[in-house]
Structures are given as C-alpha cells and as structure tokens.
Image (cartoon, rainbow, N blue to C red; front, top):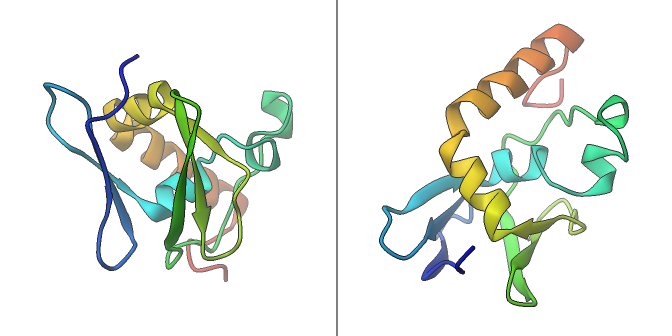
Length: 118
C-alpha cells in the first residue's frame, strides 16, 4: 500500500487526518486510535486475549513517529506508544470506522464499562 500523502493532527490533538493519494481525507479520532491500537497490549496475542480499553474519551495524540516506509507509531498522552499503525490498518480503520466504533461501544456496554472510565 502507498504511504499517505498527508498525516496531520488537529490543533486540539484529538483527531488524526490521513490522506492517501487520490482519496478523500480520513478523520480518525484519537480515542478510536487508542482503544483500537494494534499493540499486543490491546490486541493480545489471540482474539481471546484482546482487551476492551475504557476511559479514553479525552485522550490526545502527543507524537507521531515514522516506522520504516510502512507505518507510524502514535504516542498518546496516557503514555501508550506501543502500537504500530500500518498504512493498511489506517486505511481499514477509515473504511470500517462506523462498524468498528459501534462494536467498541457495544463491548463497553456489555462489560459495564464507560468511555469516561467510570
């Protein structure tokens, strides 16, 4: 997959804008990126180990660092920085944004958890 032509963080640090060549920009909220981080800490090493991360409504992006020619490492203000977001994964999040977000909200509700951590 081709690298994005632009990666931009909003002034409030709450949204990542990703633009792939010839495509419309994708808006990915920091909260969504944090709770769906591809890190082993969140995803585990199998589907059974995946963690539902609550309480990240106010999380912000503090840094984005390139990883080779295929990804970026995003650091959040809660110090989570182990997720490597490949171009393919960012594009998938953009395409499946609504479905993935609803699945996350459903998981929170099923587990009695909150986006606010309460």
